[in-house]
Image (cartoon, rainbow, N blue to C red; front, side, top):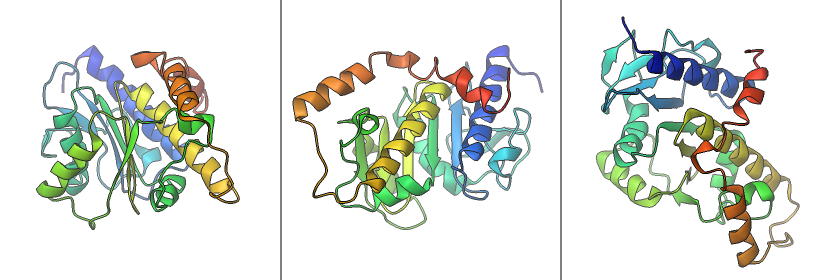
Length: 236
């Protein structure tokens, strides 16, 4: 299989994201996925082979699929029902180069709280007005629920799937991974708070200011941090 240099780099970065997710304990057996667009191939995406642990994912065994999760190249199988989420987001969000749908313990716990993610930490303020919530409707993602999810998601970077997990999208693999890391920490901090009734929430104007300050890097967000993440895997 002949692939472009751009696709080779995306394969390396995506496999690294899987490896890093395993390192951070974000994996869930052989379930959940991280997908990324294939440069220069409209409607083509890379995703993990179903049945592999995250730490087993390599640039070579990533599978190329279309929006329906059908294999374009590589060795399957792929989890078509799992790609129902990714395909819907990729189709509706041209800005979503990378989509991370994970079952991170901290994110699931906060998704099950009625108030959702509160702006009680600097980490949470990165998502001030930039995160939403989608109600749990069972295991299968129907076409109807896909539409509801996309409508709820809007142009935000993250969505809490109530009682389920989360989705983070980024304009790059690096941004999506970085934002997932920030979301995980924000949720952990919230869970460590003694009581939601006694937490300090900054004034809305301060929350808005901080959000703008934290987003000042724009689409380059996560690029500066990426080499440090890779260092965790001893990748030079």
